[in-house]
Image (tube, rainbow, N blue to C red; front, side, top):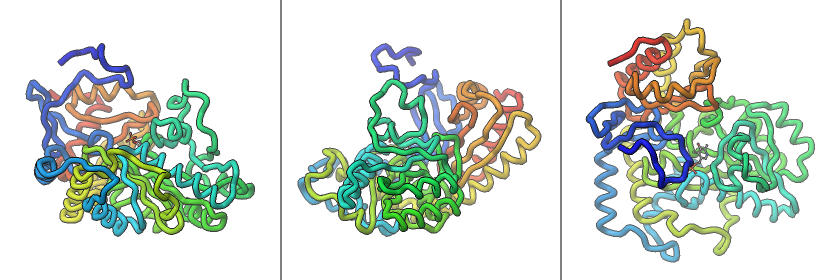
Length: 395
Ligand SMILES: *Cc1c(COP(=O)(O)O)cnc(C)c1O
């Protein structure tokens, strides 16, 4: 495996490991060394690697029809839209190819909503520490200066508030004239695994109702079972106006979606928005298969149970660890915040523990295991994380 990548743009600081095969929560490199996956390609391969039903669906659809165009009806796209709407309480879907594109779609809906309300210079409320993507509009919405640095001028039209802070929200609502929407994550993934309270999300819903703001929930990471429900907002019992999905929706096949209900579902008309690849017969077949498997195997409920096991295991194993500031999470989205910059742990976890983890916001170990893990694998993750933090080196 080449240690350098002279012909790739330097967008990632890559680990010196490369995988050639995977099965469930296990991965193998070219030398046959086995690794345990506690990141699922950053919340993407929720149903694990090498899922036979997904592989079969891809092969079957590839032999039949990959792509036509959105200039034609695509039966699988309407079917997937109907299923996602039934699961989420939304009414219409727009399909694209990534999380950033899904959020771009939501932000374009907010602009059309503003036009309807005759708000000339509309503002969208966004949060500190949020992450919404790397395109120009979504990086402007993102609450991380490191993502924005170098890309001025930023797309205007965003107002930033502290996350999960009801008072800040109420203060913003006192000057609501130009605000037309809120874009929020139910658990901030890139922001250090921070869980918004149900009370906060319900208050957001009430304020959006009172002021005709669209409540737009970025479920790109939290959606598709990750938090122990199909969608993160379901824990709070609220109905957003717009939600965005990607990551787990295709289990590694690129597909994103923006779903809306009520007036927001009627805003786009032909000419407003589009995507050449979005919602192709292949992409929709894969995502429909993901939904099939999730329903058949009750995956969100499984994630809830395993998530509690992971949290409890970590809390017990790391109880007396001096570096650990907090252990928090929802479902199989778990963060271990340390007192120190712990980015070096990603490489050490690979080398010493044969474990794939991510670190967000420099100090938080983020665990995103596949939702199809078994209990023994969850316990193994706990063991390896504890080993990583407390020293003993595994062979
Ligand atoms: C990953 C992520 C995105 C961006 O998704 P891409 O597919 O990388 O464009 C947006 N929002 C959230 C919450 C994410 O976690």
